[in-house]
Image (cartoon, rainbow, N blue to C red; front, side, top):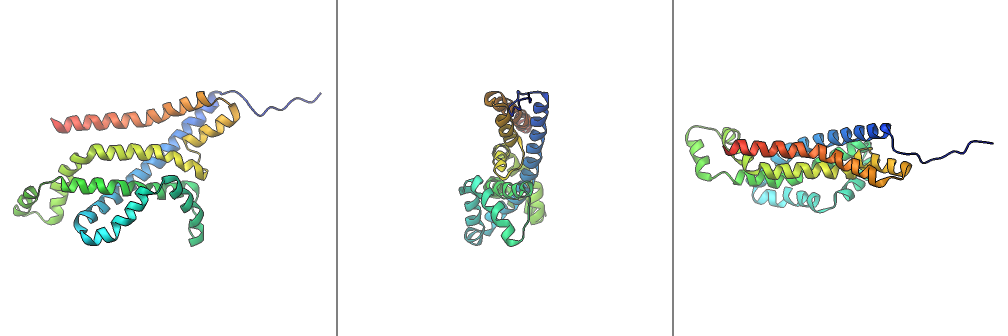
Amino acid sequence: MEPTLTFFSGFNINDLWFLGEAALRTLWISILSISLGTFLGVMFGWILYEGKTTAALTVAPILDVFRSVPLIIQLVLFYNFAPIVGLNLNAFASGVVILTIYAAALVANVARGGIEAVDQPMRRASRSLGMSYWQDLRYVVLPIGGRAVFPAWVGVALGVMKDSALVSVLGYVELLKASQILITRTQEPFLILSIAGAFYFALSYPISRYAASLEKRWAQ
């Protein structure tokens, strides 16, 4: 009598390792996207602050599009239309590109708010001390404005980390995609989603606590 082949099997230690590797991939794509998005977002925020009418007519509408259109739609459209213009990107690269632009669109307004948080008398005082425009930005605006909007930036960073789960629609095996794969095989959605949620918490909680400790240190 031939043995019966079964597709479903219970959750085991190898599955936990599989989820752990997926969590690291989530962390990696999040770090890249947040870092690049923050850099671009600060530049866009500076353009919005200094550009006045020009920025309002050019940069601002583009950023509004990326802030307004659901991220999952941006991911699917870019991944499917990029090859048409000769960009043969895999799921990871496509996810990084869209998450970076999405993060930059969110950070841009945060950065602009940080620049506006620095009083003009303080900026004029720095210029009267002989600082150049760029020295004023580096030594006055960035430290003071950065502290003012740091909590908002942390919120954006944590949001982008959670939104990275949407890259799973492109086939990139991050934490959510790995969970879906295991749920299909084990038929244990509660257990697997609970473990995935614990991994997301483990990735996010240290960031929020470290950010809170920095805010307390700066307040002293």
